[in-house]
Length: 294
Image (cartoon, rainbow, N blue to C red):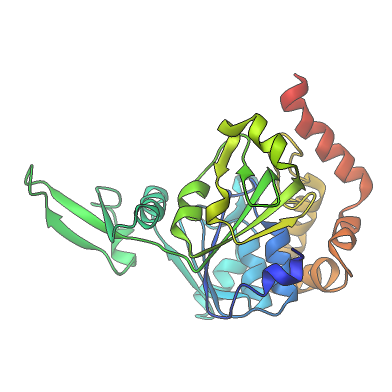
């Protein structure tokens, strides 16, 4: 379906889980569609959040992000926009450990209400979150933390290829995407390309998300740009450096300018990509293909 049809599956106030991790396979195209559609007040969750979190705060897409880390990337430092929004009380950064986020999605995927763990015990991270409980293990007597299941209303996941039925294939690291897809009530897949079911069947071991979990498939070439999609393109460093510079110097006003230029002004996804530029696209694609060429 189209970007607009897929965005209509997401309602204001929904809990939306984002696939990928940091700069890897981020569903930027789906986020782009939701921001353009004017969605508001979403609760976003992700294993590690990058600058898509800035865009969500400033656009009004979300004022509550649940994650284990919030920064554009290590080389650029922590998000100044996140600090401005959370310290002023305009938004919430609900911080869990990375393991805890994964186990909460796993519990949701398994259909159980919680997952026992030791993650966060003995740290002050546990003091900053609500909704956990502790128990004595009935087998060993050890003290355990009970992590509540996460069952998002919608999952947004970007993959390398998918057929029209929703059989999605992932190359490289899977991150928490399989559990997210199984835990969510609705799943929207954006894909670098839609391929035939015959091609999917030729490599069934690569089908990580099966059709029966998927509600929408949207073809979105370079759908993670300026982030990376393993084996297809590497990060667009010129774009990421420019974004980091404008947010460092202008803060949230810089994000608004970025949103105007890349999200609101383009007529379509091709227009978004044109802002990045052909030269940078070709360079990122060349670097991405080296994974296979070497």
